[in-house]
Each structure stands twice: as structure tokens, then as C-alpha cells.
Length: 212
Image 1 (cartoon, rainbow, N blue to C red):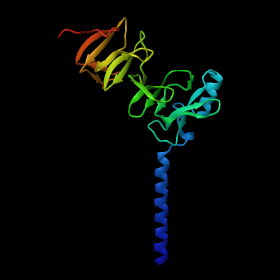
Image 2 (image 1 turned 30 degrees about the vertical axis):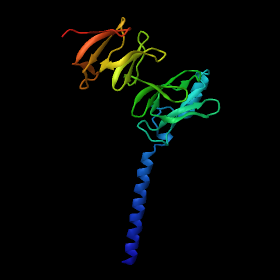
Image 3 (image 1 turned 180 degrees about the vertical axis):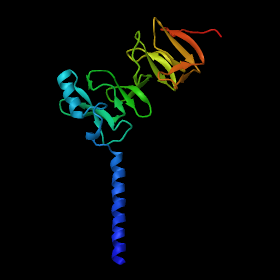
């Protein structure tokens, strides 16, 4: 009985050890298990930036040992010597290759979404998220967010129309549709804005609300 109890105790310890090991290993996703169609391997990205875009001297790398919602955190490295320029701290980075002379870059900051950052990684302004990416510029302006409100910036990231709307569409023919107290219908594949108060804003920030 003593031998049997000792054997049973050893088996329980072994099972518990295996379970603990599995739990901790599940928290860190090895680089080789990353979906290569979603996030490129670091060596591939570096080589791509050197061969295809030789003027780009930074590349985005991923640290799979830092757990995030996108398998690991991203940062920037120098393509010539692999020195870390900006430590891995972003959920994802918008492009693979970068010119270090650029004034700003786009990265997804945890719990904040797509944002413009400067060369040191410092936050500049939050972009509006459109089609799972940062909003594009239409007629020279792009949507941005501040305190859950939407406004417009120019390509120098200067605020042209302060964030004051619940939501807004991109500019077209000199005007953008805007709304307050509107909501998105998420029950359909391509959600659309409904309800609330609607109007248009021009590039000078002059708003014309629809008549009641």
C-alpha cells in the first residue's frame, strides 16, 4: 500500500507539472506557429525591405514572447544591423518597411486602435479605423478620433475640423456627411450609420444640419 500510494502521488505530481507547463506554453506562441499569411516572419520582412525597397532602412519586427491579441507585439528595427529603433509595444504596424526620414508612422496602440506615432514612438493622434485599417485621405483630409468623437486632419496631421461628431463619412466633392447621436447597424455585413442628427461639413468646418 505504501508503494502504491507513493506511485500514485508521483503520478499526480507529474500530471500537475504537465498541466502547468501546457498553461504557460499556451500563453506564448512560438514564432514558427504564427500564421505567415497574417504576420510575416522577421527575417522575411527584413529581406523584403532590403531587396524590394532598398531606400527603406527600418523594418517592422514582432516579439512573439510578448503576448498580445495579434500573437506578439511589434516594433521597429534597423535593416542594416538589426538594432531595435522602437521597442516592440504595438498590436500591429501598418506597413512592413519604413524610411527613417519620415516624420511619422502608423501603428495600432493597445486599447487605443490605429494611431500616428513620431520617430521615437510617441503618440501623435488617433486615426479613425476604416475597413480594419487607418482611415485613408480623401480630398486631402482624413478622419481622426479624440474622446470618442470624430474630426478631420490634413496630411501634416494638423487638425482642420475638430473632433465633434459621433461619426462621419469621408469627404466627397468638398463635403462630408456627419452625424450626432447616430449608431451603426452591426447586424448587416457592411454596417451603416443610422438615426441621430445628420448634416454636412465643408473643408472650412462650416456645418449645415438637415432641417427637422
